[in-house]
Amino acid sequence: MNAMDAISIDALSARDDLLGEEERLARDAVRRFVRERYLPRAGELYEREEFPRDLIPEIAELGLLGASIHGYGCAGMGPVAYGLILEELEYGDSGLRSFVSVQGSLAMYAIAAFGTEAQKQKYLPEMAKGKLIGCFGLTEPDSGSDPASMQTRARRDGDAFVLSGTKMWITNAPFCDLCVVWAKVDDGGPESIRGFVVERDRPGFEARRIHGKMSLRSSETGEVVLEECRVPASAMLENKPGLGAALRCLNEARFGISWGAVGAARACVECAIAYARERTQFGVPIAKKQLVQEALVEMTSELVKAELLALHYGRLKEKQGRLAPEQVSLCKRNNVRAALEIARRARGILGANGILLEYPVIRHMLNLESVYTYEGTHEVHTLVLGKALTGQNAF
Ligand code: TGC
Ligand code: FAD
Image (cartoon, rainbow, N blue to C red):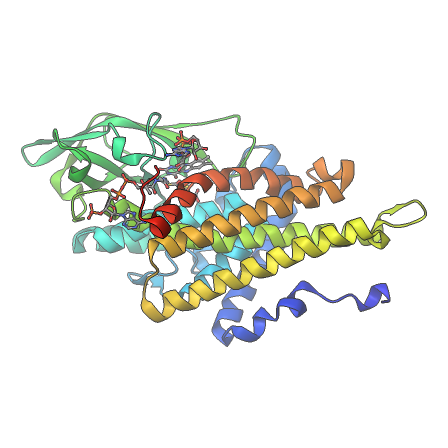
């Protein structure tokens, strides 16, 4: 085949044929934004550990904040359109997608699904406009995969609650306006867990930036310290007490991550193919070598499978209104692992150039290490599925 005749990944997967017009339009708008506004700065932002806060108004203008929520100024997109926009954002960088996931699928979703009408009216329209930024505080220094062991407490005191505890690894915390904090009420156990919308200017609330991450560097991560932080009783969400509500928010975000990972993987495959066609060794482009072709074919097959898996579950979610948690686990686990392996193989194909920020591959590879861990580690999702298949709890 002449090099000019090469088939594109899109032509191979033919996924576009399965998308509706509106889904393609939403995808294309975000694709343009990411390529024109984010990618030219991606390496520099990564190097400087900086999230581009100046882009928030444009992200909001595109309708990407709380995009799958209906009403309250949100775009009300279907699951597939929502997935596609996250895929395009993560083609840019996992940190860009994380910002949107945490704002929409975690903080806004928690308020939309479990908030009082007054909380929804107060927060959601401003969050959709990007005027208020939210974060989601579940993880703690001693409580990661096992959030039921959280130590954060909300003590009832008249018509207020007093929150004490530390939340760790909280995306968007350094510049948040509010945090959805999950806490055990009074002396209760996991069955007493409630969500609280805590505004940043409450005395006793502090968000400290975590520096020195070698992954997801262009996402700002922080520690949220609550020291006798008093909030009105009206800050409490109306969730059924227990861990289930927080996990329902995670289902939304995990679904989006399954799509996002595909975007990161696609950026890596495209880069590896282009590089292999250009890079000459032993007198010919390395693309002429069978081992390189085998790697590119494996990467592309895994990418197309991941794309189609996300689309399948997206259509199912559209039809049924929800997915079973095990289906979300299967999709997140498969797609993130596939993306990480694709990124590692792409890194190899680029040789020494593969470690330069000039190419997107090392950035994606390092980012995906976080994606593998957050929103339920790969092992947690293995155990969720293992339990579902065998009926045996192996946590
Ligand atoms: P378990 O006893 O199994 O369940 C407690 C209650 O929750 C219900 N439930 C779920 N509900 C909805 N969706 C799910 N996925 C659910 N899983 C369980 C369950 O039915 C039960 O309800 P009820 O009414 O009977 O009380 O809970 P467990 O304590 O044994 O834990 C289960 C486990 C380990 C799977 C769960 O704790 C878990 O998923 N751990 C991982 C923690 C995690 O993912 N943390 C993520 C933090 S946020 C984040 O990482 C953001 S990064 C975002 C970004 O930057 O993009
Ligand atoms: P641990 O739970 O300590 O796990 C360590 C290792 O042990 C892992 O390999 C794990 O799979 C394994 N392990 C644990 N339990 C078992 C078991 N039963 N069987 C077998 N293996 C097991 N959290 C939030 O609440 N909000 C956020 O916005 C947020 N953003 C994040 C952003 C970044 C960049 C990162 C890295 C994390 C973020 N997190 C956030 C936290 C994330 O959800 C946790 O890191 C994750 O849940 C894992 O917890 P841990 O890091 O404490 O690991």
